[in-house]
Image (cartoon, rainbow, N blue to C red; front, side, top):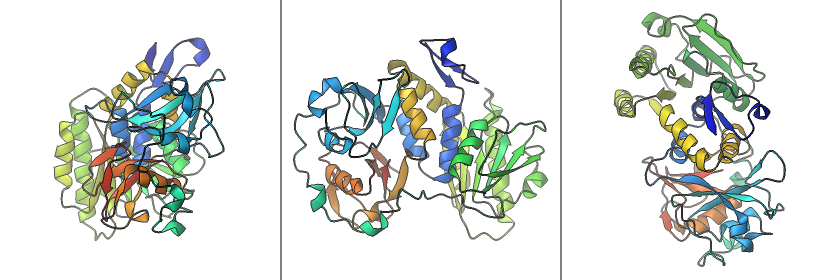
Length: 394
């Protein structure tokens, strides 16, 4: 049995059931998007059930006994159309998720492999995929910059005496604040604007939060917010099933845009918006076209339902999603492709994977400058990357 609820009961109270807190995926994803613009597209494809997209699959290593005793980097070379991200150990009552394990950690005998693929018919050869160069023979473009590429997370939010992020339309998005508190730089200032005077906040240890109450669609109230100083505006929807929810989100963002225009701006503003209707993504995108603003949209209904459908077939996927959404060590990141290749250079996905391995990361796919996403291509597929393209890594 799998159910959604506002809060998750203790597992012992209903053995055999899997609970997913309502809107928990959406709120955690919005927090990641606030810190790492663009990454929402990757999570959305994995969580969504869109035709032709990639999904996470769990497969027992017993199906592939020739992989036992190998580490994640070695075993990954045997998969033609999937990316091996790690595994789940089921030796205890609670499954243990290992994403991007260390090289000395070998695949256990009873493990479930975590695989990213666009095809449910995952191909695992009994030999390494041919045509791959040895990792040590590959020339890295700027290897000296890799040492801190993943150890020090890049983020839009840094310490400042001014609010770095403003959350509008806040009601009960406690998971959103918790994730921002865990991921943002220490002492980052966050301003929360709410229509509810008695709103309660979770216990926060790293960020400093100021709460202001007032109507959402009040031009004078929004102009009084320090929008000109912040780097990110997050606008969750009301999480209520009504046709006005998206309209209020779009109207609030338009008011923010008008308020910004009244003062000179040098820095680009990043906007994260949660919507219910996919048609409104184009409406909002067109409204912000030509402005000094980047936009990430989260369709919470699609994400939540997509995750539930996947967990119905593989309940342990909940533990995997919790790990990649909650762990600062297992985040999906976008990194500049030019850190690993020269402009116009052509490499197979397998060879590019070997280069990324040098930075102790796993390559999941690529994102072009046009925002076109390609996850888990065939290892032999040739990729040509240019300036402005990104690698999707974990």
